[in-house]
Image (cartoon, rainbow, N blue to C red; front, top):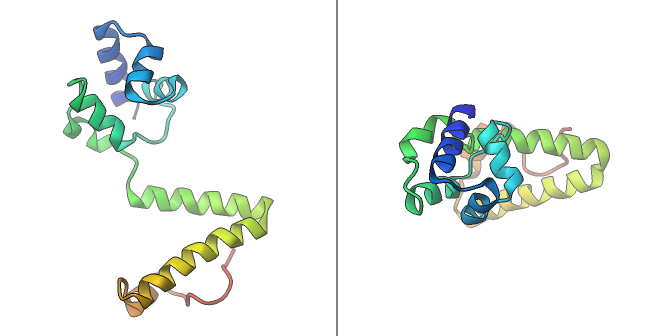
Length: 133
C-alpha cells in the first residue's frame, strides 16, 4: 500500500495542491489522505480510485489493483476480529449484530436468493442457535 500512497502524494505535490485542499477535493478527511499517502491506512476505497482517475486523471485503476485491500475476504476477516473484540467488551451488542446477519441469511434462504444446502456446506453450522465465540 505504501507504493500507491507515495504515488498519490507525488502526483498531488506535482499539481501543487496541499493535503487539506486535495482531501477536500477527494471528499475525504486530511487524516485519511495523510494515512493513505504514508501507507498507514489499511484500505483504499474504490470511490477514491475512481475520483483520482475520473476527476484528476492522476491514477489508472490497473495501477492500484494489487494494493486494494477492499476484497471480501479482508472485509470478512476484519468483521470477525471486530466482532470478537466487541464480544469481549459487550457480549450483548456482539450477539445482536451476529443475529442481524443470521436473520439476513434466513431471509435470503426463505426468499430463494440463497440455497440453504449451499450455505450449510460452506458455513458448516446451522443458522439457528447462538454464535460460537
